[in-house]
Image (cartoon, rainbow, N blue to C red; front, top):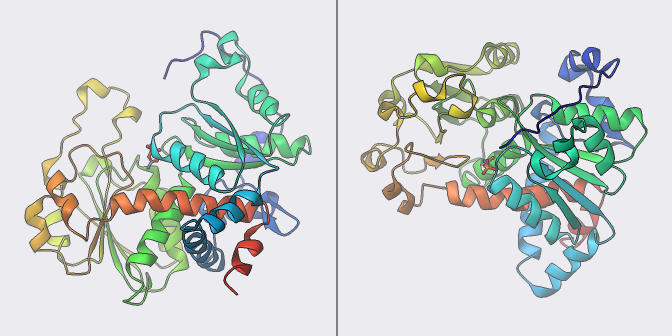
Length: 360
Ligand code: CP
């Protein structure tokens, strides 16, 4: 995406100190009236919240099947407005958030690049998001910079602006709503075999720069007896911060570059793309690592209940012929994103009880 010609740098006293506080020590900052209002990183979610979001997503999915149900849903937040500020490319996160807002009746504004906002005139990022807060109730952000969504939340809170903020992907750091929809996909897929507890999950590919696998790994502390297999070439190994987190929470994990040996062992295989966009020398970096691709031959080796996931977009990691197998759930997974994001937004604005009441 094009960069603005000039950038105004503003210094916010106190931000750096706040950002450096351990995530688990600042969860209360994002809660108002007992409800999580800003959703910025996976460490904010506990098991009760995750279970509630999965139930709510299913309830919204079921309500949306009928005209009457869809009309009820679309009346819930008809008085609210959302801003989608996506200054890093996105297809499904953008479209699924847009449709999640539509399901709930919200009005939408969008900016999809800094070349179409006053940032091209040099307006700072911080003044830009401060401006959105003058018009909307919710800002959803996809941004290349680690921590920018959190900074937005912090700035709006300094100014006592009651605007909710959701992180729709922050550079190579986190993608918490992807982690929510991944949990929903795992729980739904395993609903007849005891859910996610006790399962073995392989995460494959660019684990060092893949924000989806990072956010999903944090959530594993909420489930019992999970075993993770981090499968990657050496240069794309999972970063130390995640490994320290897993050790601290006594979550078993194994690192390997031997994909073939892991494939028959696990209950879920989470494939990821090589994230070349974060390379300092993209032209020199390969994005084809055939030893880490899932092929149609692998379908006869995986367990009968094993699911194949991918946050998408894919490149060569999964052969197209795999798509036909019922265990390939990545297209369902992206659709789950819409239901889960609708569930999250309904929770943030406190209309989740009205949805659940339809099922009592
Ligand atoms: N999974 C995901 O974040 O996809 P997009 O980049 O297309 O939004």
